[in-house]
Every structure is written in C-alpha cells, then in structure tokens.
Length: 519
Image 1 (cartoon, rainbow, N blue to C red):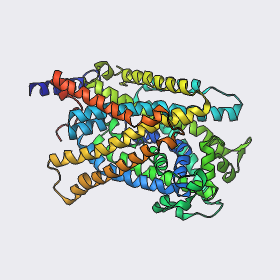
Image 2 (image 1 turned 30 degrees about the horizontal axis):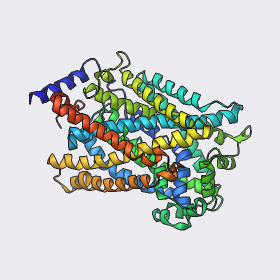
Image 3 (image 1 turned 120 degrees about the vertical axis):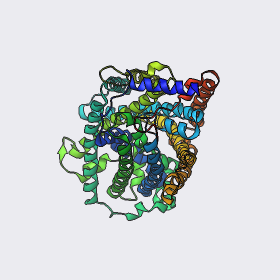
Image 4 (image 1 turned 180 degrees about the horizontal axis):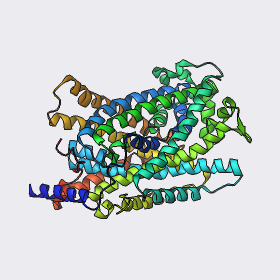
C-alpha cells in the first residue's frame, strides 16, 4: 500500500510541479485542428483513394462508409472511457485502467512506436508530393532525402513552442485543404461524365466482381482497400492525448471525437464518390492503377483540370491548389503524428516508467521538448534506413510512405480492439453498467467495434504483400510481428518493474487529469 501511495505522490508532484503541459490552451476548435490534421484529409484522398480503388474499384466510396460505421461504434465506448480516464496517455492510460499495468505498458510502447513510424513514414509522402509539385512549378528536382530531413527538422523546431501555436498552424493548413477538396467535389457533382453512379455507395458492392477492381488489377484485394479506407482516419483517436492542454476536457473529448469521425466519414465518402463520378465507373480503376504506379502524379490531377477551368499557367487553379495542399496537408499529418508520439513518451517519462528526462517540459512554452527531440532522432533513424534501401523519388512514396504506415496500422487497429475490450472490463468491474443505455454504450458497442477492428487487422495483414508491392522482402513478410515485439517489450518492462520497483510499477498509466481522478 505504501508503494502505491508513493507512486501516486510522485506522479502528482511531476504533474503539478515544474514539468507540466500548457493548461487551458486548447478549446474544441483547436483540439479538432490537432486531430483532424492527423488524418490529413487531402493526403488521405490523394494517397489512399488509389488503394481503396485497388480493393473495390468503383465501389471505393462504400469502403469509407464501412470504416465510418466501425469507427463511430468504436468511439461510443471510447468517449465514455475518456470522460472517466482523462490523461495525456490516451490508449496507454485506458488499457492500464482496464487490464492493469502490464498490458497498459505493452500498449504504451506499441502505440508510441507505431506513431513514430507514422511520423517518419509520412515524411516520405510529403517528400514525394513536394518533389513533384516543385518540379512542376519550377523545373527543379529537389532530392527527396533533403525534403524528408528538412521537414523533420521543421517538426522538431515547431514542437519546441507552445501548443497553441501548433494548433493555429495546423488549423490554417486544414481550412485550405478542406476548401480545395470541397471545390472539387461540388465541381465534379455538376460536371459528371457518366451520371452519379449511386451504386458506388452500396456497402455490398465492395464484394462485387463487376466493380472493376479485378478486371484492372488482376485480383482485387479487400485488405488493401480497407487499408486505404482505415488509414484515412488514423489520428482521430488523438483527442484524449490533448486532455491536459484542453479547456474542460470532459466536455470537449466527446464532441471532438465524434465530429472528427463522422465529419471525416461524410467528407471522404463524398469526395471519393465524386472521384468516381469525375472519371466514370469504368475508367476510375485504371486511374487508380496509374496513380499507384507513378504514371500520373495523383489520381485527382487530370480531373481537377477538367472540372475547374480557371487556369494558372498549364494547369487549373484547382490543380495548383491540390498540388500545394497535398504538401502542406502531408506535413500537417506527419506533424500531428509527431506531436502524439511525443506525448506518449512524455507521459511515460513523467510517470517514471521511462527515463524521467522525457517528462521535462520547457519552462516558458510548456512543450515536451525533450521527448520531441528523442522522437526526432528515432524518426531520422527510420528515414535513414529506408533511404539506404531505396533512395528514389517513387521509393519515398511506395516504401517509406507505405510500408512504415502499413506496420503502424496493424499495431493501431489491433490496439483499438484491445482498448474496446478494456472499456468493457473497466465499466463492468466498476459496477457502472446499470441501465440499457449503459449496456449499449460500454458493452455492446465496444464488443462490436472490437470484432470489426480484428477483421480489419486480419485483412490488412493478409493483403500486405500486394500493398507493399513486394513478396519475400523481410520487412513485408514479418511486419505484423514488429508491433507484437513492441508490445512484448513493454509488457516485459512492466513485469520487471513489478519485481524490482513496485512504486514505479504502480504508477504506470495512473495519472488522471484534475477533476477526473476520483471518477
């Protein structure tokens, strides 16, 4: 009992002493900017739509409907948990409170590793599109390695400052890219090639052999399609990670999560549907194939020229807007992932389960600058390894920008399933399941979400060779084991603390934000 009390006291001292994040810095709009830019709507459409088309052809919009439903069901229990367990640790804290410190620590190391992989991987996406945009605008071929390390250095620098500055910057990027997407959607709606093709929205159509996927790609792989859809949302679950910096986090977390999930779902489904409408259902699969293979810079560019006639030079103003915002949107995405992985390392450092130096914050900006610097070094190592394997421009997109996120998606989707089960255990054990509504919110919805997420994880693993354009490559063949190894490493560390340092073990994932600790 003494060890537990000591651990709790240490955590409180760490939080309310010198090293704490900036309190009351973010309202609902700012939290939305931070998490929705992690999903990077324009990058999701330009990069992920070709993969959704690969899996489902002209029925690609229906994949986004499936993902919207599954993530919304997941969010029901997730938000209920966020009201009780409000902490910068997010998933880590939720699993710790549901299943205990061993699984909680396994979750912490896995999700931190996956988000670092995301942050590093998306630098490849940023570099690829920045290279093509700069080359098209100026004729200069900037090496992708220079863009990757340059954008990484910029992330580390920006993370040094106050989180409100970050939120404002991400907000500007988000507004511009949403405007570009919506202009395309409306323009395509009124200039369709072959009608509106409403069958693209039929959820059953993803299983139909006549949607064009098999005819174009030889064999449509639903796992690849689901990757394209599910990867488009990764980042929406970041809301609880900003709890300590939010105003009234218990009220903000729910709206922030549901607005991002459902809002993104409506946006993604509409824009992907308009992409099918713009190309026509028979031509869209070929367009997706050309985008994947680098024949065209992106699947939207030819249609943005056609549906929006106001030209700037050799391309339409809308095409220019897409070329610019795919770069800023991809950067915002990698920066959001960088911030979240930083908060996981910060949270573990502050609780003493990793070196306490990671839990230090800047005296003036209250930024987690030490954890951010460490994440920067780890990202640089990942980028360097991928460059050593393939330093080509296309490799930045198809290797670093695809393989690293694939591995991260496997880990994140599996952890989401675990978090859903943790929600059930937490509320049942707490005796809070006392009404029909409670059974629906914290038992049935989480169980249903867990099943859907396990299926999505399996499909992604099953389609990894196709998605990675590689068979027999070590990373592709064994990528599902990397998140598992991270989980085992974290769980083993918790076991070690349990045997050697009970106070440190007792503090794993145990800090709750003020006002929720007694819940």
